[in-house]
Image (cartoon, rainbow, N blue to C red; front, side, top):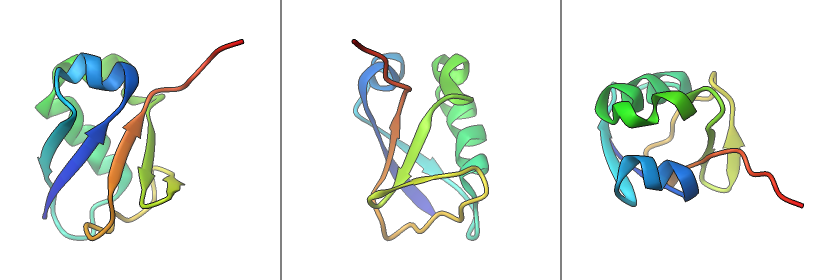
Length: 81
């Protein structure tokens, strides 16, 4: 399945674009997405372990199955004060 993954904040800066297209097998999990992002956009590798992934309106864990019909977005951790 082809996924269009939206990038935000530092993830977008490192990727150099707002969306990244990833090709994953059916029944892929978020952990598979992280691995594919690291292969497709090596600049994201330092961020991958802490990157938040949202599928639809919910944050997902590495074991979450990806539903290609929903929007997928990646957010780095946020800090502020």
